[in-house]
Length: 466
Ligand SMILES: [Zn+2]
Image (cartoon, rainbow, N blue to C red):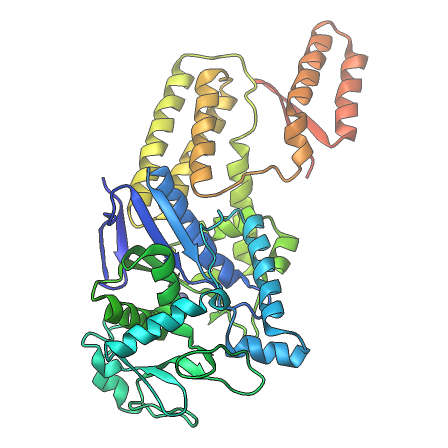
């Protein structure tokens, strides 16, 4: 079965076929960097990281671009309040966000364009739109996109221009022909960063940056354009209008939108003051917990964040980690091995089927949990050897496609595993030789180090003390 992706533009899930065979171009709208990033920003980054990882695992080469909005009203306001340079302020938040993405195991994008380094391309884009009569320079030095010049304006958000026009009004200070027109270029105001342009000193509007950056980094047509579903209107609608008016080609084949993180039923946002920052989350939890939280439901649905959901996700993570415990027995073939091999193949094909179905990560996780159960059953039955390690390898491979690191909470435990196993073998030999006191000394010494031994009918297992 081929990969099927839900397209916001058509409101349908359709088989994915990149413009260039084997290559996928993907542009994802990044944050406006003026304050600490919150887990809503992390969700979008994680969703598109999972999309990218799966595409790469499926054999595609992915060119992934994410922008930083580093010129914006909010940045300027914040910088003025703090007495800081707006570029320095934006840069420090961008650097912190990049560091957090690394902590979250998000693969680095191929390019991170910023407004401040894309000004010539933005100006050229706007000039071309004016030439095509899709935009006009106003007497006050602003430049606006002319919505009435664009026949299919509204097609992404499914809004009708006539409906939008009724009730729309021109705000004070704007110099538009039509209330629906939006700014491509804003004339300079005192105390704001500004650049030279054919229309005088000024700075770009928000929407034009993504059209210009996408064109610069990925060309006129791209495969996937992504972002949060709060960007469908006006941001992505306006991006389509700008780019397609310039190129006369369809811009992105597929528009993918992730749902918002909801806290107590409300969208997490700075204006509502209900933020959980990425750094606060990572102080209390591992990166895998947040990723697993995102993986547990549809990327298009709202993500409900509560303490209970986080606690439940931690338990899920522990269950996943249990698959990595070493084999204990000495059986390497027979019914247990056959059963595990069958479960391994089933999990792999279930995983792929789920991910091919519009990145159904909850279904992919279910396939992983089936494999965890099969591995743990095989271990209890005393299975070891190649059948056991092969199943564990598949488990690690599939978890890796989802971007899970699956590190043991205590790193030293995994590093010490072969030595602990060695001591367990030694203790077992001592018991066979009826050297009870020495055997107990080994057990007690391990216990003092936080390693708990459990003797069972299939041999001795160990775990780290919680
Ligand atoms: Zn954007």
